[in-house]
Image 1 (cartoon, each protein chain N blue to C red):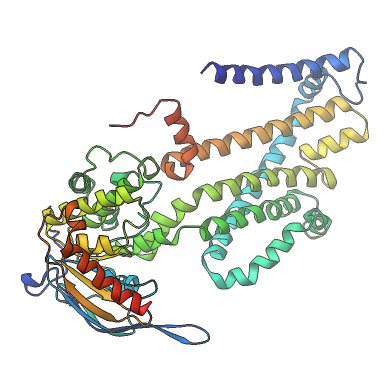
Image 2 (image 1 turned 60 degrees about the vertical axis):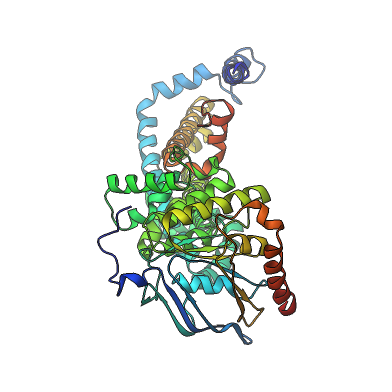
Length: 268
Length: 269
């Protein structure tokens, strides 16, 4: 894919795809009290890494992801992506994939993938070509003319990933993208995502509830505690790639999984 | 396939049967011509006074079209405001909902005092009559848009106006159309009823006048015209719905599923 001409001016090229979260806090003001959702969260993600955020429900992991996407403003601290602060959604730097595929039901798969390009007035021919490339990348070559209701849950998420990648941003943020899928589809989609990640070299930040999914996919797992959300552990997954189904029953896998589970049980 | 054809033929047969009964029952004297004039005498009555009916139809059509513009335009506009902004919703919705239960026809005499017995009072009455369901449907259509779609659009850098044109409007279209169907039908009711009550022109006026002189054939000629008006309106709405469905396939999944079931659309793999 060609890089777009009007990309936000980034400082050093080496920083493209790097994420820096510094002392970030989030306080929700309700009528009766202030709820501290996140407190003093700092983390650094190097370009091209696959990082998974896990934690009990309500630990603010999705909130943190939404702030990285520029969809929500933190009440304290700074978040920089590719070396510049993220103050509002910037599809040139960050693509987002949501839990529900969030496809527009009145558009075909390819029109959905073209949507972010259409918003910026990219010419039709160029749009179509990029959408075809993205659909091919996610394994949906030939399904472009279908509407979302004619696609399975896994295929919808593939379209959604294609839409997140179509502008070729260095960072892909994924908010529990496979949570609504059945177990088998979920495993397949995990492998598919790793293949796409390896092919594109994106930085991926992935939020999930599933510890198995976390260890299976990640280079690094960041474990968060329940409200107020804090980072309680940051572990490196040294398992070789490509990851295989057999690793799930190995000792290395099990001990990583147990370590995460102990943190979560303690804070939940 | 054969089942579908027979259903269609059956429908046609029912219509033909009703038309035949309309002609035969009064002819054979089973129903007096005063209660139900035969189809042929109704058509003859309409034909001999075609000029009068034509003029009445023009008046009624004019009132219907103007009222529909007010009812639908105003209903969609206010419905959009009420549907998207919580503060006006809190202020207006309870009033609108209770107003909906009031038989609005009680207002019509007031309108004739204010606006006279010409077209203006009919237009005012029918506009308000058709406005409420259109507004309520539009408000509901906008309120029920999946917030995830708007969030996704925002993550892709959509501005407020882009979200309106590319997400909110297409997502709200099916609900708004169903509101227009109800609202438009009520506009026709409102115009004809108000013409029948107090007026000097229009189909409703003709029906009411011929009824007072017990000329049933002429009454039924007017009824037939109103019937055609309603059928015509329905055809227009169906045409709009089809046009919108091409743009809107996803939320009208039922249609597409029919296509799949009948084998018109085979999976690609």
